[in-house]
Length: 98
Image 1: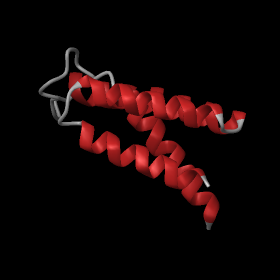
Image 2: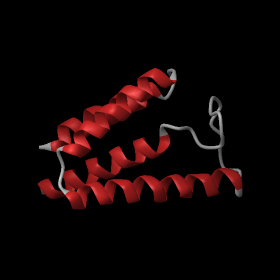
Image 3: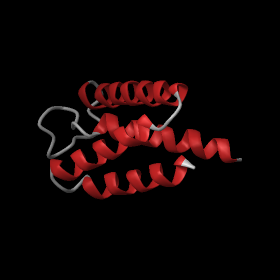
């Protein structure tokens, strides 16, 4: 049920990667609304995935110099944890459908 909502949020986030922070704020608000409707274990899963995968990207960028985000105010863009949380929810929900 949530798979369609999360997929839509992921698409909007992907489109927003080239846009300003306003679109990212809309996606973050949508993810927050989606999280409020979910079970506790899925929320914990999303938060952990967002934090862990953002840390992995930070290590890859900072220490291995694998890639750079051009418009990031810091090493990691502010929207990145929300993107990883959205992707984690999408794949967990998608896995539950089969």
